[in-house]
Length: 124
Image (cartoon, rainbow, N blue to C red; front, side, top):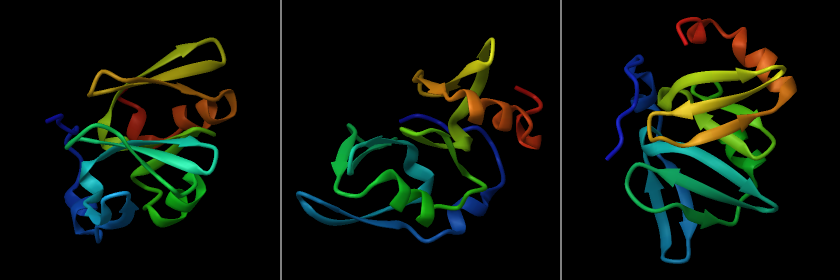
C-alpha cells in the first residue's frame, strides 16, 4: 500500500465515490485514489488498493465530482490527488509530477505555470 503525504484530514470527510465496474457498483474512498487517467470516453482509476481499473466515465465527469482543492487537473489526460504528489520537476516550460508511488506524469505547459503558483507547492 502506498502512502500519501500528510495534509489535513478533510479529504476523509468527503463521501466515497460511487463507480460502476464490470463487477458491479462499488464505493471508493477519495483517499484511496492516487490519480485518474483519461482515455477517450473512459477513465483509468489508479488506487492504492489494486491494479488500475477502467470505468465508463470521462475524466471531466470525475473532475466535476471530486473536490478541486485535492484533485488537480495537470494535463488533459490526468487528474491527480495532490496528497500523492512528492515532487514537481521542470524542463523549461514543461514539467513532470513525481508521485509517492513512483509514477511520473507529464504536466501540460499551460497547467505547469498554474501549478507552480499554487501555495501548497512552495516547498516542492
